[in-house]
Length: 165
Length: 176
Image 1 (cartoon, chains in turn brown, purple):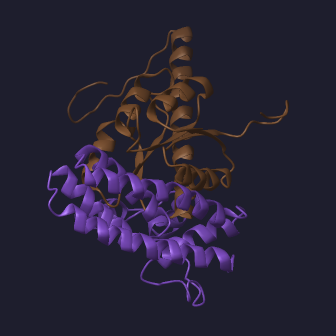
Image 2: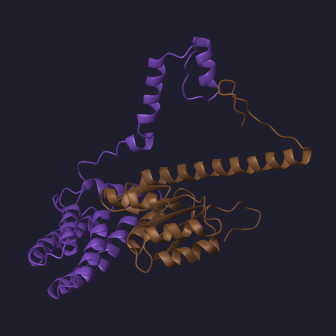
């Protein structure tokens, strides 16, 4: 997809059964510098996730075959799916579906009708937050490895409670 | 100390409280940071030019939604509005026809699903009164109340016709 030597663009997976919404979300994301992979239902979203390992996923709630909630919960169990930011698209200020989306493991939601330029900002922010989290995990792992190698450890002593961590 | 505050803010911190911590100041700071909605949500929508949608039926389409798509178009997605409206017109014609059939044979599941997806795409092109009507149909179907459906369907078809006409007017006029 990208010429060798160039840093590849972040990939976003967009799953919605409505081709019109796919075009709108796709344009919103391409404008933010993403490569967009499109799925027409929840099952296809799972297949494409495994193949492309996207950095971010946008899921519509109502989809045939496998709906957005089920797809979201299943994504969380896939390799690489535990920490990927998942943004769900819900109906008109539908409080139940927003609660349901979070229960299924969504990171954030946007309710229709969507303000596209704000969605663009939100997606950028979600990606930045997830990268920061990844960096944190990586440096924690590096610290653990370094301490193990040096046979070092660290602890915190709370003088008030007398407890050590 | 004002000097400390300046140094903290310059170092990238969001706020500063001096010790000893006063309950009221801490509470105020927490409230300020926890209750404030994210800045992106507060961004005002771009003002809609007075000319946009003037000869398109104003009650049939929400200007802000239409303008939102136009805005995305102006931000690099050339021809987006026409593509989106064409996709909507192609898909919705079939959906409204199948919705009529499903109401006629009282297939509650089909009515609910068709009404829901048509509601969602109609809202995305700004046909909000149509979307509301379809939401009502979806609700009636979910509750198994078929008695009110034919009348609601007539209402939805009426809103649909108006929305289609308004979208075609906007498409014919081209980008503002």
